Length: 272
Image (cartoon, rainbow, N blue to C red; front, side, top):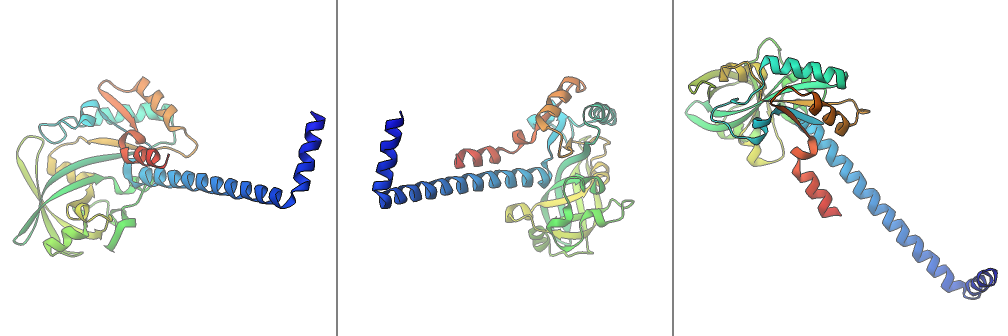
């Protein structure tokens, strides 16, 4: 062993230029590998944070049938007041610092003057939503919902393409018409407080964000569609999810944010 080491050292010293070239090449290769891995890790982290903070949350809770997306009428599988209370109690024991953010997804027709277009709405609690994200970060004119009067739910944030097609601006009104949970139709006049850009024209032409109370009034219900959960940074998502599933009310389940963001796993697969 000692003789082999001595011979190797002699060869290295005898061919100094070749040795220096080999060592340099190894350093360059190691630096490139470390840089690439660091870039990939930083990209994965940034995409994960943007996905979570973009509105999905660390996990979501809803009726099992709600996640399957099969409804004969709006909020057929929504969470009742009693369901939400039971979920809050269960989460308080598992993760006391968790923020619970109610959501309703609804759709209908938005009208201004002689123009009418289909919209896809997201209803939320603007003040509670600040624990996860802010509707104001996408606003290009006006303000986000968190800066409006909480006692007046008849205020909305709309996509810039929807505003352009309807020829409306901040301060003007829209009429929203939606089907109710009883199969009828309902309508409400709302004020536009902000115009937002989500970066995708197809989304901007149908996007409306509204307070939960407005959607519940339009749909004639006290239910919510699902709950997005924002966990403290130090709380492990997978462990919290497993513990909640063990104590969840009947018919209620939860999903990890990665189950709801298929693009994230596709990104990892492509990079890998």
